[in-house]
Length: 355
Ligand code: KG4
Ligand code: ZN
Image 1 (tube, rainbow, N blue to C red):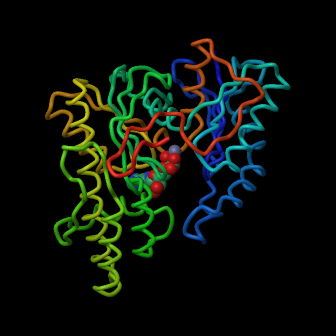
Image 2 (image 1 turned 180 degrees about the vertical axis):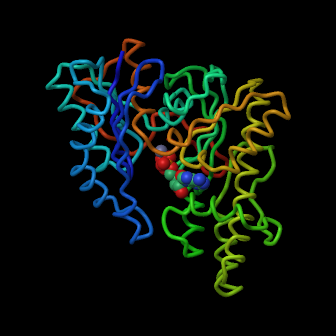
């Protein structure tokens, strides 16, 4: 069964055709980075308008690259939460229109579930046939621009996913982007810091990560961003490529070490031997290396998605939708766009229960 996935929750207009084994037949990701870069962050109204301009062409191009028509598909999956509501609405309404016109079943997908299942995606040209696919149960670290949390995943549906801990303030990707902005590196900071960190000395700058212990599986990243802000303010501008690279290396070492450490600790606590990464920050080279290294030192298996599966894409939405369709689930025309996730949040100390 083939499923068309549509994703428009933030600043990527994306579509993909994926089969029910996770094989990606085609995908198009239209990034809005150029629209938002001049503002140093995402402007929701501009995001909605850009999605509206691009959703039609992106879907048409995706179907044409797959050599398929709507009548060849088994369903349409669309991200309906969490995200910018005006941006989500564009994808949701486009998906409803196509489902209505074609008579195909419609399924709404939680973007975070998409990230958690992205590890099952396979792109023919990059797939390593020797690597066995991930299998349930696994413990996943989902680290993106909007979310950073650890989950136990026993299956693909929402009731089979349990949050084990998460950030009490900024998401890891948000911290990367804010530090990128403080250092004047441009937007989004994550991939730029990742690249610059490779030539820096992580010990040249002292940064501390709050909650760098495994008594709690929660994270906190707003403090480290403030430390970089203080460095910039008190030490004057961090001048020269060498100094910038050192700050990037120290920041990256601090953030990736706590993420990797707590992922492994969570799996140990749960008695689960497979760990998985998801979300834009999972594209980070040092995080991928640390997680692989730490997992193998503890006799665990780390399954790390391809880079294209980590950052926002519609293939993960199509695959999560195909799991819902296979379970006999369907949504009606009353599907709405919502800013919050459907995954229950764990109680976080000092913050109370989170909806
Ligand atoms: O999953 P994603 O594409 O969108 C959200 O759902 O938020 O994640 C985007 C985030 C951004 O904060 C970006 O800076 C970060 O992922 N990111 C990275 C890297 N590539 C993207 N962070 C660190 N290292 C990277 N290589
Ligand atoms: Zn995302």
